[in-house]
Length: 334
Image (cartoon, rainbow, N blue to C red; front, side):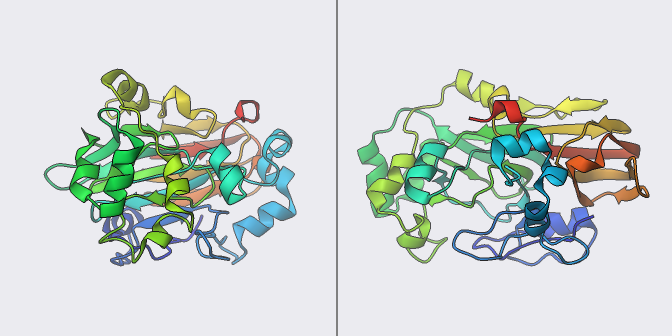
């Protein structure tokens, strides 16, 4: 099992992570727990990386034996990258309006194979009106977005987005380029491509300056990442799933468009797991993970674990509810 990994962030949160894990560490600025992370925070050497219980960095042990950890097909498609970043994210305050670059932009301007498409699995909410914000309601001109960013017009930015009430079990796919924000009181499991690239459009009151908000890029270049198209009801319906009422067996959680980027299921009770690199988060109950070799791994509410491909066919046993996060299948990479 993995220890908590909560690098300090600029926004408040962390109480829901502490409550899930059953500990007392609800640090005010620990709203993100990077689970089984081989990704560093932008511009940092080690911050964000997960350590295994023996103290080794997961990044280093994967790099030393990628086929055992990831499987031959995955390594053929993605090299020694896990192609996945998983977080627990507890929004103790509303996050700023921001977006993320796609693969093509990341390759051209940031020297990375991966951009940052992401998805949210809502696992808890608090407050009177838990909401997320996703995509512009109507088409917006690049000039209007540039002016909002120049003047830091928070009300115009937030008011232009689709405001979506959420409850536990809801999932949201967030394609790269989509302007978005997460409201206060929303607690999610977040799957992402393995980067820390954020274009923070609404930085005033959150970050110290525009340079840090835009990854050091020129403003005009950074704003090329923004999708200016309006998201109508049909498009929103294709990105959002409501799975809270599905409580049996295996529940696929994400929109179809997420498949080239990552996979996630909610598992209720015992389940067979095919060989794969995977990240397990236990939402409720207790049980064990059984592998072909070695002793069973005890699991309980709040536990997080990383499963290597070399574990082979594994089995969850017990009265527990888990989220299994996996990278894209090797055949789906772009």
